[in-house]
Image (tube, rainbow, N blue to C red; front, side, top):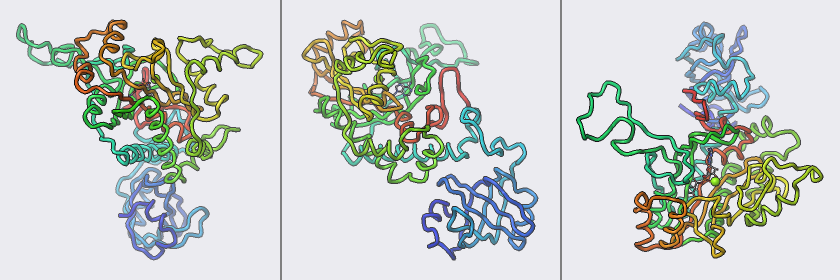
Length: 471
Ligand code: 4AD
Ligand code: MG
């Protein structure tokens, strides 16, 4: 069995080859003498045309059972195609409809569906051109992620999903509980299995960072890449309750090394996609780049070819403060003020209007950021950085970590964190502490920028968001 992508890569070079191809019928056109099947196997956007005649084995079954959505296995010879948009097709000698489909009831039989409607069909939407293209780009970005870090000597560490720690300190965790239906009652004094993880409160992780730090303090350079969970009630086009995060952590590195690494990584990813996903990018660009915006290729080339802008938080606040007011044509919903979070509207403005390319904002007020970030000499800001992208906003959040035990303890005390819960983390500062830094990339936001999609729900196979979970 040969994948369609492989056959089409050979193009006319494959003419004369005898092959078996398997896939699902996107459409079937019955004519008197010939039946034409557009077959897709998900290996690429293009479909392969099967040409079947009455002499072909299986002709009658195809007449009886062939319908949009059915699964087909076909054998035949590759021939040149006269049809538009295809160099070759398969002249079928034998064919079997291995899985019939009720064409009239098949939910994707109609050509056009809104993305919103497709979200209610998460089991079938992978067979659409759009989700097909998006998921192949997502796959390429996952591959590029491993390739980049492996080539640069990082060790892949699997951080746990069940944890007792709230890394970001935002209290946005899902708690893990045990189902005790039908279990015998617990003996007095035994571990309570009922409402927690074998007697201890436990949560789904919001970030693998703290675990990554443990491994960075032994392996020097590590990265995690896995699911993370946030119980934040943000019902937006950029927030998921379950999303994937890439979190590198580098020992003997400071904030500037951290920014360099993030920039090199993002550039590598988008170069990889430009080099390997041309057909899918062209489809997504044609269908989803909003009117008047640069093409998807231009947007990706911008990232690959130009250094990102860099600006301190203090300067960023000054910059967005300048434009507030109807006179400048911008009215902030949240007026910027030093000490407050940069809001999405400010972040997008910086990336889209001021710099027109990705910008790294760094040195944030300590009040805006998590306990583990390294305090700067001014005593007010921490060595944090966010990478902001046009259209997407915050794609990366990272920092240099506080490696000084006394400063870290002081900071934890200010925030009311219980030392007892962080002994392991503190030990890393007791035994061979060093400057280290890392960042987290929201994988779906990385995919958003590469696909021109507008809603994060359409770039993850099975979206979980506030109040919504299909399958
Ligand atoms: O900025 P965040 O919260 O940083 C951390 O979790 C750090 N511990 C990372 C680190 O230094 N190792 O999250 C990192 C990134 C964000 O920049 C954003 O791209 C993405 O994760 N992200 C989300 N993506 C989708 N849905 C959500 N609800 C997200 N929350 C964060
Ligand atoms: Mg952040």
